[in-house]
Amino acid sequence: MRAYDRLKPYMEKAMAIKTALTLFEWDNETLAPQEAGELTASVIGLLSGEYLEAAAGEEVEQLLARCEAEDAALSSEAERAIVREMKEELERVRDIPKEEYQEFARLTARSASIWAKAREEQNFAVFAPALASIIRYQKKFAGYRAQKGEALYDVMLEDYEKGFTMESLDRFFGLIKTHLVPFLQKIKTEGRRIDDSFLTGDYPEYKQEKLARFLAEYVGFDFKRGVLAVSAHPFTTNLHNKDVRITTHYTKRVDSSLFSVIHEAGHGIYEMGIRNDLTLTPVGQGASMGMHESQSRFFENMIGRSEFFWMPIYEKLRGLFPDELGEIPLEAFTDAVNKVQPGLIRTEADELTYSLHVLIRYEIEKLLIEEDMDVREIPRVWADKYEEYLGVRPSHSGEGELQDIHWSQGSFGYFPSYALGSAFAAQIYYHMRENMDFDGLLARGELGVIREYLRENIHQYGRLKTSRQILKDTTGEDFNPLYYIRYLKEKYGKIYRVKN
Image (cartoon, rainbow, N blue to C red; front, side, top):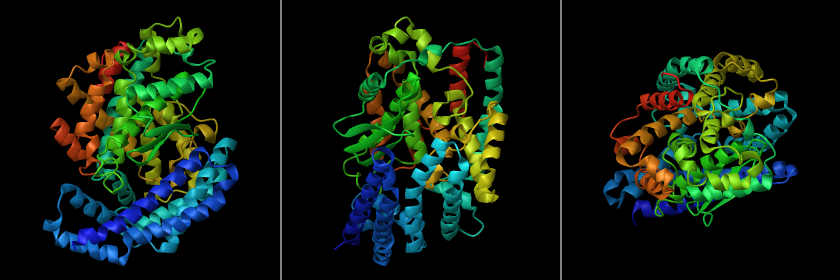
């Protein structure tokens, strides 16, 4: 019997446990009762220990070594990729003691509810002790893996976007600061005024939910293979390519839910597009967090905020909200949903300022991991950086450092993927415009052509390719962040009638 065939049951067990843990995560954020946290965390801890043994046991390590030695016996690109991903996961968790791994899983399971309570009370001190513990664990785990001289934060970054270190991200964010901060100031001082007041008002939740389901389905989210729920922080998760779950939230500002749904649907469409032979394997997920984010940002912004997208469906939107939007022409609506307004909340940010929100989180994570900044300093540093980069300052922690759930989940190194994803999306967008009538397809409601192009070139491959391989194979170029700068300056220069 091939070593791969003997390895396969371990892979299937690990994936089954991981799928169960994903289901717990979904439940915790959507339907779980308030007092479920502690006991559920115990279950998650036990399952996490079982996952560790299935993914990094001694026999798994031996079988992976044999698979690599018998490479010619691997019958497909998918098998080679599965072995590669399993080896990377083995190396990621192998040296973590089982007790520590389980305790960290319990800690992050509990921390989500602690974070939610702190956010509700607008009190960072409630969350600070749990966050400090999470950071200690993450630094310890990164230390187990770090090569001699390798920075701990670089180890964490590698988990989300291979090949992007602090050095390369510093260059990337430096480019954003150099080009976009002055351009933002120019728009604020020279740009025309845009009215978006009509987006806030009495938008009944049941009508927003109806719109959400319509828009998700319109852009291509298949409700036979997916569901939509409500959570404090919109997100997407999946069990496999036939069970993909997205969430949104509803506020008095209609575009908040509207675009979060299109954004999460973009993530969901990616997961649904992964090949059947890859799903429920370590290769059956997005190429990277950055590439995943490129698809959600592509659907939200390149598609959803385009005037052409709304041409076939704007009357439906006005029909749902005749009192609020009945007298608002399409051009005024699309100007409003693209308005540049430096604010405090990342998920509500306009495209131009969005990556500045990410930059702030990146800089704070570096301080926490590389310079051992005390977590109690986060509120002050956060507020100072928002004032420096965006000219606004949070009045409380709920609109500041407690707005994102990611740190409660232990996701350090994740945030840069949001900005990289936006840049990946811009590069893909310009290439697609050269190869198809992009605006015409939107205006005719033919989103299937665009979606199929993305499935064919990106989604189907899962993790067979890295994000940079996908960019090169799809656009003919390695990652080039100048497309992102060009996209933002062209789009917002036109909207605000300023020279870029």
